View 1: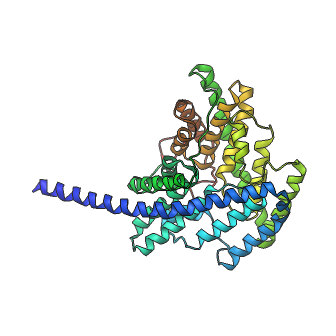
View 2: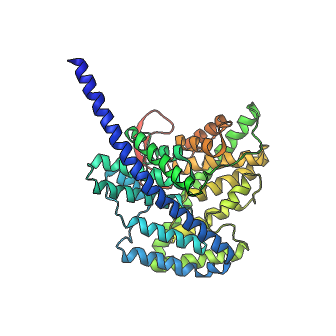
View 3: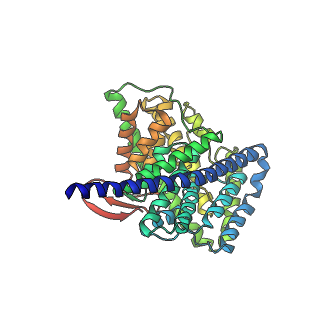
Length: 417
């Protein structure tokens, strides 16, 4: 009798496994292809802008257009990635129109020289598409949440080629400290499919070679800890500037269309003042240079300013690639002062700032392995742990919840500042 119950339960679990494997393959293929199209759209927009620098003069009109597009679509109060987080946690309905809106608006932002990333757009793109598929399949409320995480994982993985990070990040970022492990198989299958689709379309996984990895010793550990402390503080600064800039825009320029126009004008002015285009677009070329040991001392601060002014005005994209930019350039410069090799210090800075602004230590450690290889995992784990603890309860996403204290073993259930 008891054996029969065990067999019955095992068959039930296997049926669930088969169901989610099939659904996740479908989600991974569909979202993966859309993610590939999005990647090529951003890539070609960036290349066209670099070849035609005069396009930056159209940035104010691009900002006004994006605001108008969201307004006529009835999405003027769209909360971006924050809404994706609340959709998973509270089952808020993600509207399908989010996908084309974020696709178009992020492409326009990159085409005309706004400072933004693309991963926030990927999360919204994948989450909204998968959520719609869940409703078409008439899944129940709990399964719809898993579908949304599948879409997030597939899109993030298709763009960056970091499937394990995309899965853990999709599960960890919503409620830090409590992950939905029931989603790990569906998300992993969807992420693998997303990565495979991207590779078949000629998009290699993102990875970097670190020229010098220090030996494990007291001096190296001490210097990594000092750099990580500074990265944790920098993470707080980054988040505060991002939130306060958006608030100031809304306070003094209530109209969203005018806000987008003026934001574009300010970015043009800043670009003319600095005399280069290093801080327009995502800045992946600057990240690559930092990771071989080359960065300007002021680069990290200017990128924060450019990104806050761009996204605060209503342009679209994301904050994570700018966080990579900030962390790698800061680490490259400060690490060299501390005695670390600039290339290694840039990698530490990238991982530590990413961890500080997202409050996702496990995702950050895995990201460092997928981007830089596993040989320095002890250093990266240490850096992410220090940055996580010292970045406080600040974060890029106001809908993110931290379930347990960063300094004590106690339940707090607190939204980030």
